Length: 434
Image 1: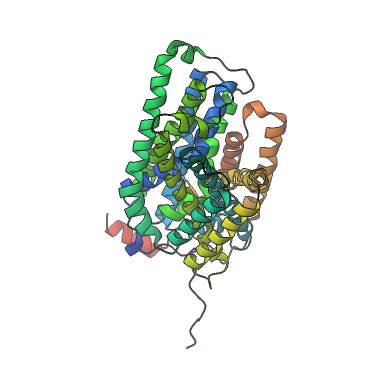
Image 2: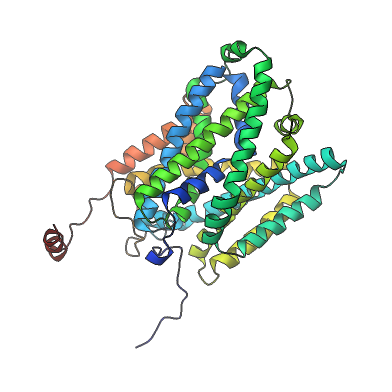
């Protein structure tokens, strides 16, 4: 009898039981750590001129709770099925068509990783300039962070998340955020706190648009969450840990960005404001170290997706290749050239609206080799992309992400195929076990 010599596709197969080692606390630690970042604080700072302080606070709470719930919901589906992000795309769209969003996801993750390296590089260069008077350290900083990223990808993802993030990285970033929050709260106490809460916006952004902006950060993680949640021991723990960890991180970082922007002089950049705070040099350095897990998360997820397309290369080998590629792009591309990569995130809002509609209500999630393309799901996704851009252009006050997500979810839920009835033997066995 002939045997197959083709390599196993670990990205499309459910994770075996012995590799399901993440408890709810591991999910919470991971997604708190991934939710913390300078970019989140910078986006939070954008809310202050556009909407009032109270409106910004309400948008942060509402948007964070909703966005984190979407992450948790996806984590639950992945934990129940044991499938990666690529596996969920195959299950929802069919094995042939799914290759398109998988490729787009890889491109997006390369862009995000490059962006993270640039953020870490610029932060390191600012610290070097302020602390040691060293200018022009951008190339050295880029190579440094790229080398660290490559070294991390040579190890085990499970070990990194459980040992480094949970036991070492998480306490450091919590202390850093607490210290910076205390420092800027003291600055606010010396100013007029009442005026801070009464501060109104300039009307350039409505409440729905502000919530949409807050939701944009957790939504950007949707194409990654399954690659980690599939290693969870229980679906309830995956949902609760992911939701709680990201909720706290997103609210804290957005709120800190609002606070820093409110008490700093007009025109002051966020990194410069953080460095001016007492102990800000150390705190910013620790946050930059934590930023590394964002880059790692992007590259690891990208390597899982790439492995689903070419399983002859292991996930580790793909990760090392992508890390080197992103380091080179960070050296070659200026900051504004990353915008085309980041704009691809608009593609994944309707993509996951369809996935949640098809797989998020108890439907069995498994890649199907027989149903090569689900054309209804594909059409909903493409129509959702058009709707997203139409709303962004002609109805910006309504936001784009949330309406698109809602429409694609409802239509995907309404047009899903009815699940096949279980075999009679399975029904008899279920009754026998009560």
